[in-house]
Image (cartoon, one colour):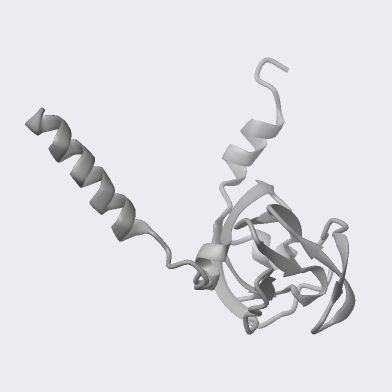
Length: 154
C-alpha cells in the first residue's frame, strides 16, 4: 500500500512539474520543432512539427547558406488559406510541413552544410512570434544517400 502511494505521489509531482501553465504560449522552439535531413545528394528536407493550436505562415519562410546566399527556389507545399488579423488572406501550415531545399554544387561538395532557416508563426490564442532564425546542419554522406537510393542487388 505504501509503495502504491509513493508511485502515485511521484507521478502527480512529475506531471505538475512538467505542466505548462494554461494560457501561457509555448516557447517558439517547442511550438515549431525543426529538423533537417539530406534526402538525396542535391536536396535537404526541412521539417517542422507544429504543436496543436499553432501554425506557421507559408510566405514567411526564408532559407540561406552559412555564406549568406539566399536559397530562393525551396519547394513549399500548398498550405491552408487563413484570413489572418496580421497578414490578411494567407496560407498557413498546421501539424507538420516538409520543405525541400535545393543545394548548390558548391554546397554539395561539402560533407556538411549549414543552413539558416527563418520562419514565423502564431498561436490560435492570438500570440504571434517575431520571425525565428535557426541554424541547422545537414550531413551529406553521398555514399549513404546513394546506397539508400539504389536497391541492393541491382
